[in-house]
Amino acid sequence: MEVRLLEKTELWISPVELIEVDLNTCAQSAAKVLGLKAEEIMVTDVLEDRLTLDILVPTIQAEQILAREKALLQALAKIPGVHLKEDTRVHSNGILGLISLDETIGKKILKRSEDLGDQIRERIRRRSLIFPTGQEVLKGQIRDTNTPFLLKALRKEGYFAAQGPILEDRAASIARAFRAAMEAGYGLILTTGGIGAEDKDQTLEALIHVDPQATLPYILKFEPGQGRHTKDGVRLGVGQLGATLIICLPGPHDEVQLSWPVLIQSLKSNLNKEGLGLALAKALRKKFLDRSKNPFHPTSHLEEVNHGPE
Image (cartoon, rainbow, N blue to C red):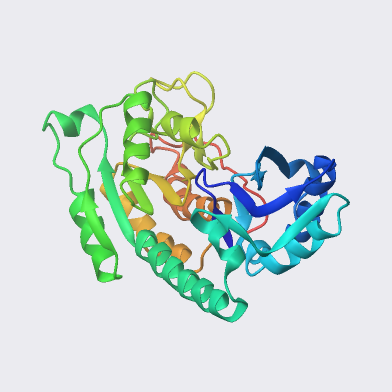
């Protein structure tokens, strides 16, 4: 179980008498006992009858320090010049306090902590926030039918679903909204709109800003120079910000409806962001490919997109 030290990184051994001791040897012995690399711990202070060690990494496996006080003292006692007393103990603050616990008691505490952590992670995973995007929605020119649909669908599946503010078509603003939602404990963010091929479509740019490794599969591609399109196609986006999954869906309501069965099944199957993105793109592609087969339909110029083996 990985735990954050939260700046409580010191272990101090007291009382102890030191006579011409090699402090590097002390640090190396402690590192071996605690399962750390030699460069991950150092002696930072020797004051009267106290020897202070500082762990130089922000996280550690709880099992590395649990009930290791006796082993650490025994290792230090073997170093020339280190003299321990009958009442010598290892002292610490924060999570490092596990070092002096009885092993049986410590394991029970860790188990309770893991169970609580699982409950918290599951609660966060099921907290969802929906952001509609676009000036036409913001100005009230069109009615947002996507958010009520998604709220109802998510709640039916046991999610705590809430509506976020309508986001303007600006990558920086959208990225700030993503970060704020993550910090507020939402594990799932859905956006609708802003993934088109015009300059004003900025949702995917915001996604890349918070997750440079986001997956952006094409729904369709355009031949160069088609109409108002400044991008080479329409994509959707799936990214990760900390523990928060971000899914950028199209704006047209029929496409959101078409996406939903695939989206919820992918979430239930715990697909990674690449698999989830490709599954959604495949479902949405069919709509446009069916239209493109009609030579009289305005989308007949669209290119079929190959995302690899189905």
